[in-house]
Amino acid sequence: MKMETLQISIFLLACSLSACWTLPSIRKNENDLESEARDYLAEIDRLTSQKCYESTVAEWDYATDINTQNEKAKLKMSLELAKLTKEIWTNVTITFKERQDFKDPDLLRKLKKIRVLGSAALPDDEYKKYAQLETSMTKHYSTTKVCPFETREACIYSLEPDLTKIMRESRYEGALRHFWTQWHDKSGGPIKKSYKQFIEISNQAAKLNNFNDMGELWLTAYESETIKDDVEQLWQTLKPLYQNIHAYVRAKLRNVYGDQFSDDGLIPAHLLGNMWAQSWENIYSLMVPYPKKSSIDVTQEMIKQGYTPLKMFQVADEFFTSMGLIPMPNEFWKQSLIEKPKNREVVCHASAWDFCNGKDFRIKQCTRVTTKDLVIVHHEMGHIQYQLQYKHQPYIYREGANPGFHEAVGDTIALSVITPKHLRKIGLLDKTVPIDDHETSINFLFAMALEKIAFLPFSYLIDKYRWDIFDGTVDESQYNTHWWKLRKEYQGIKPPSVRTEEHFDAGAKFHIPANVEYLRYFVSTVIQFQFHRSLCTEASQYSPEDPAKPLHNCDIYGSKVAGAKLADGLSMGSSRKWPEIMKVMTGQEKMDASAIREYFKPLEDWLTSVNEKMRETPGWN
Ligand code: X8Z
Ligand code: ZN
Image 1 (cartoon, rainbow, N blue to C red):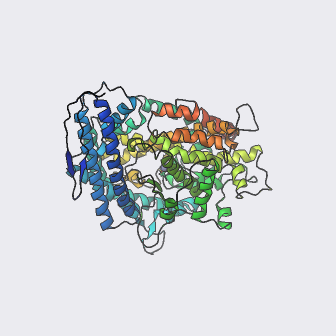
Image 2: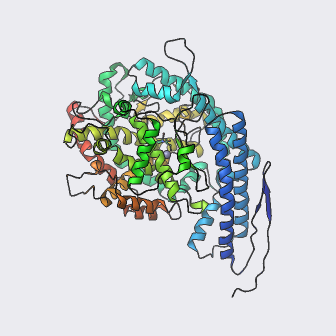
Image 3: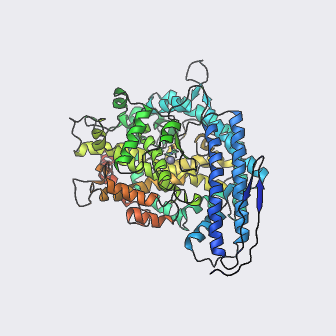
């Protein structure tokens, strides 16, 4: 029987611009504060989920129809959510401050998570400024238009689809240089001042959370004291492979655009098939290792077969369900936005949305019928699959085990989808062409390396850059200089036109104005191969002892056991530290590069010998 207890009711009435809510009272039961805390957290779960739903609806409305009214509504809801979060935080930290004697590890984990408040810690006015800056920078990025090349037509070229297509398909150096420069000048430059203010307010928020700066706060999501060193270590292990592919690509590009190269060993950033030179699969056709063998660029075949964005989403959904995973719900098919609307401005950058009510999940993507977009569709659907798997968890655990896990799910699936074996299965590669020979494998691995290995230094340097800005190593006077210093050092690339501190080229990449942490993509690129190796083993599609079943050939389509293993990990959300969840999914507790190295081993050997034959020395000055 419970003892008679002293109960103090604290009613908290919190209000935002127009809405009010009553926070549940904490009954201070001195004898069983632990169970009171548990009850309280369960109560606020409903309240937060509801507010999260309302704010996500407003955000969605804005991102799919950029106009002033939607912008105002989104800001209002974002303020309300921040305010509610802060009230809860205050309530929890005051009431349970001294309760480190709590025994329940789950309760302690929840309280620990609640204590990191993030930007909501800011005073109302400052939070408003913070949210406005983020919105206005993203709006600028999403609505930037640039002028055509060598004509006097109107300046109406947008990033998606126009510039993306030009960077992907054009081989005309002058045009590439023109559009590269226009985009960087017009999207990045004008937000430089706002970005500086944004950094200042971000750091103010970090300090209110007892961190030195926002870079430090971001890293807490990885729950590891050694995360920076671990990532550096991974990069050092993978750098030789990157330098090998860099050298081969440089040699081939020199044959096409000779006069653009000097003896510094750097590659001009506009020649790599992508606005940010972040992944290079679009220039595959300029340097196919074995041109007579088949390739995985199935864009033309998709177009020929009348693929539509909807068909691409159905193909992806079919893969997930073949493994016994959760199908995309009805709301998803009804409410997602999968093509760029013609009549209004939208935030085209692809994203996957959890509306916090366990029912509504949507993707927003300006999908084009290309191989690359087929991969992105799987990437985005991986996010939704994760959200569906953990939807039963309390609000505070409805997130990835760490941010890299969330990015890795769809990519792990896509590693199977994109194998020649699977593309043939779904009728996108000719059944009569052989695919099991060494040369076809090299073609395939080379295309994959242009996507995955080329991406490694980029995905690392974006946050290295921001860590240096957040902690004050670099100030506004060096924003652009530092960006190009890192681009040279890590990627071995250089800008195609003169850059000064008038410019802000980092701002020309979505995640900078939109304030999305980027280390997640580096982590994802490494761990998705660990996931792949484990699921392939589970599906009996790979064995290290069997040369007929190499890791890069594995397709886990239809494997219910692999699906179950994946679901086991995903359904935990962030309720445990990620090493524990990784153990469930892979048997390993650490990130490690052995799976990605093993996957690319045949290519690494091939590149080493070809570079030697060409006398192309990896590296740059
Ligand atoms: O931003 C994305 C996704 C949404 S999470 C489309 N990606 C990064 C990028 O585009 O820079 C996926 C790969 C890297
Ligand atoms: Zn993503």
